[in-house]
Length: 143
Image (cartoon, rainbow, N blue to C red):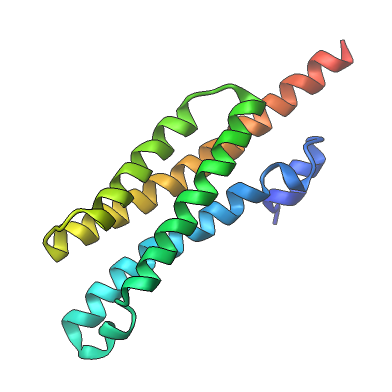
């Protein structure tokens, strides 16, 4: 089984090339899972109220957005592609809208999960673009 780090190292990028994006994938996915899980638990029992603490939700949002901004900016400097940043910006807008606007609970969950999914997709795109840029640079350096 090939891991992100192993694959990146073989292509000459080093494991650190995709580390911020891997952290971003985990943060965005945890954020989305938290939103869905909290909604389900609140609907089924009162236990979900423990996970619906405002501070936890703000922490997830701040973490996901901060990591995304850093990783996508770093990736853009490497590959100069606007695609990961565009997808990531859309995810950030959805997350912040869900977090800051006073919305019905189901709308907030839908926006949060969609935002988290877009951020995850942006990190995956960023990793791919970084790898492509690294492969291109290797070919150019060999010529």
